[in-house]
Image 1 (cartoon, helix red, strand yellow):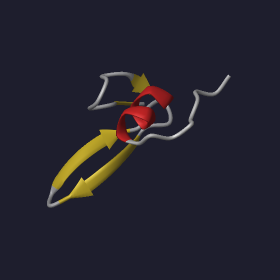
Image 2: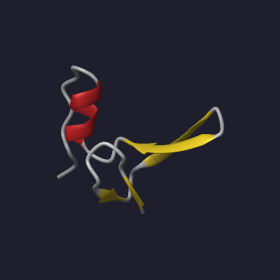
Image 3: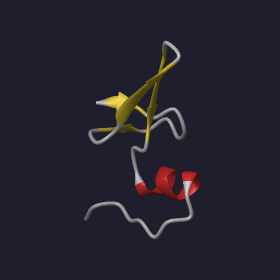
Image 4: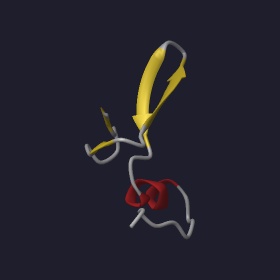
Length: 45
């Protein structure tokens, strides 16, 4: 598991983005997805 940069949550579905030599971890939960986009998403049950 990795810690989301946006909310600090440790979550098994997070992913890393590598850009310009820097690694960033995002989208651990619906909260973060809604924060990034105006999308109708929800956490898994």
